[in-house]
Image 1 (cartoon, rainbow, N blue to C red):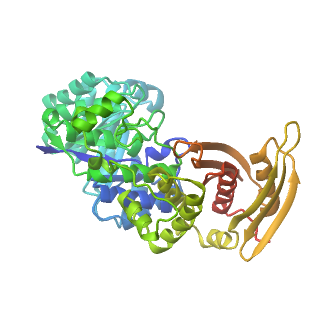
Image 2 (cartoon, helix red, strand yellow):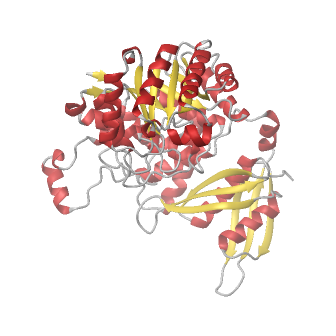
Image 3 (cartoon, rainbow, N blue to C red):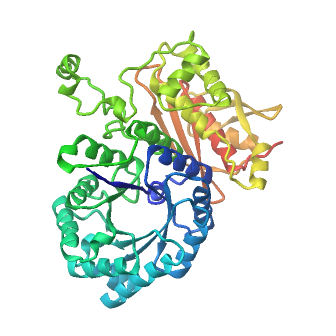
Length: 518
């Protein structure tokens, strides 16, 4: 059985999803989770793109052990220099150079002839090999490139020293049969193809990224580039969890597997969802909340008689539990810690204390506590964790500007402006304001927070989701604020949606470092 390399680009292509940007500590947290998951290669960013991207690649490269760490670069010397510099302390560095090869890109974007196209690709690979023995070349928009030209490019970059050659479906254009035929043609027509690993990086514009990636594997591809939860540009990329479980479940068809520890798929999915603020759809394959849920009576009857009647995978194989552990107000700290660990969250003493405090408050409000409630409390703790890599100046600002909610008194009436009395704590002092105005209760509280903290901010996005079913479900609030052109995310969870909204606003203010200690 062949082992397919998993090249994870959540930190690079995945972060390009609108609203999915991560700070350095969040990227490092995800990178460590990907290493534990078993990803062979982690693409940490595009080092030349910005100082922030360079620092992210450098930090991940300096820290991660056990997986290759990769930086993207155009076939341009300054890009490759930046990638090499950022990766210089990596245990297993890889430089990933790319150049578009399709007619539309050569003519309109690059203004290149076919000969110049090949020459530039070869030059990029050769220059990267001066710094790194592991060099990957990507022929951008390969599925819309003439097959004759693509074969010439692939042969030339292998001769130049490319250890991996990637054939991306950059715009999600190819069908599975077309992808199979294209990869097979490379194996049939490129004489030195055996000296490299053929890879694919397929986008999901037509909803076929996983299918085209599987077709490439059948044709001989040895690496698949993918992201957690299928994040990425536009409609996203091939989903890591789906490609991995498809290969595992249908081993009879593909005769191939991966190094991925599949029991960690759900915890890793939840971590990425938490740090990006992008929720996993309930019906998402493999890691969605409904992936192993059965409501139909016929299905339930079949499941009780034999689970394989309606489940082709076991929930425990991907990190789900078959049943919920019902916790209540009489449960202790040890029970909560055990349940959190079962759900894939290993909390330290400080984190457990904070989550337990909020858990006890929630247990007084709700009759039953579900897994999703516990995960929401844990995710809120992750959101509020300090970033150890921010500058000392910004860190000092955060240390002197941590605002928390003490109480609020809100009155809303039809046809009248809402009135609010808000009390916040900063350090050892409390501040209270009474205001009126706004379009509704959240708007009123937002302006009260601005008055007390002195933070010059505006709301970009505001969303509320129910964590579980029922009238006593927790409200999960995510908010994006704008301060001086920069966007900051806040998160709050409570059975009181207004309270959750206020906590989310304060969380975002504290993350922005814009609050003023009075």
